[in-house]
Length: 444
Ligand code: ASP
Image 1 (tube, rainbow, N blue to C red):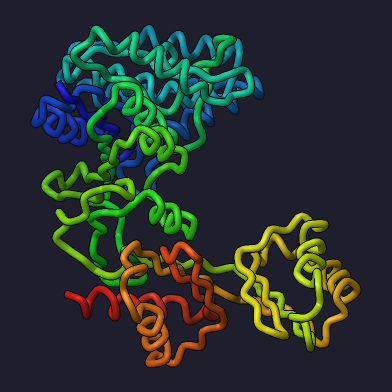
Image 2: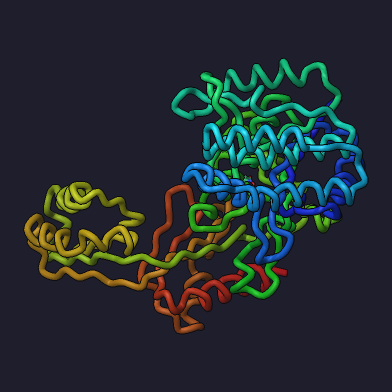
């Protein structure tokens, strides 16, 4: 039978009430056979994630300080969930083994991984599912790089004979036998790898939002949820700071042609966002806005270079880029005119070498005018349909003009998947709202 891999984030499993919602979701679809849980997350905004509590215990253990009190809080979280769910199990042996190991070898990765390990055990017991330790199936090399082929083989061997399984997220083991975690938020990656290995028809990633939003809800009032987004579009938006999913969670499913569905544990009736490849049958979509999403990022500077007859000077760009390269700087955009060139880069990265870069540029290209402008925000308007729609850029500019927002730079990649504009940081929120109105509200 076809199967689905379902991953639940920390807030989806923060307390017994959340566990019940998760169990209802899993039990409502027999295809949801493989479950990847995170560690218990925050129950309220000032709460502490179990993962962070574990990191703290490890730090204390490493400095030879008694961590009994801190560890007790962790025990209380799990014991509270177990007793409220009314399940018959005890994690005491596991707790003792963890304390012993932390005292003997306080490894950060081992400590952090226990949050998912213990939560996986509780969830498996509550669901009546098999528990499969991620240390037996997710395999890293000695440098901590995931060994995908070995992992896929191990997952298939282990899950092959099982009707269902709970596999904790976030960690695995190295070929030398040490526990190793992914970077923070890495349970997303585990889910993606398991989905690849079992050739899932879909990878459902359950969290506390109903999918990706067209724009930042702190800027636009109740923005629409993106129903369908391609992997390429997602990359553009994620790069600009829209984050819901761990970056490394894309590759394993994308390479296997498996869509990801972002869902909300607290609103399972919502469809969420589908992340699909370019060859998805988009005709099934109900909403067809020209754009998919808008994202903005502050903290950029532009180096503006002016020189008469720049266009005739061979190697001009090369000389400029060599200066950046020699100073270890990468740039974001480089629109140029006949006699001008502007290079957008991170203000923070530029800061330590700012004067040096200016002096070297003066020497390298002898510009007529050279200046740095700070306080620039970059705004990306992303959408696969822009390619076949005329007038998109005109509409973006019209909305900026009506709001009297000065566009400082524009960059449209050859893929025509996005249009990037640079505006002053103060104008960013209004620019995003205007574009949202132009493309989403007015297309409804
Ligand atoms: N529990 C880990 C973290 O807090 C991993 C995860 O939630 O995906 O980063």
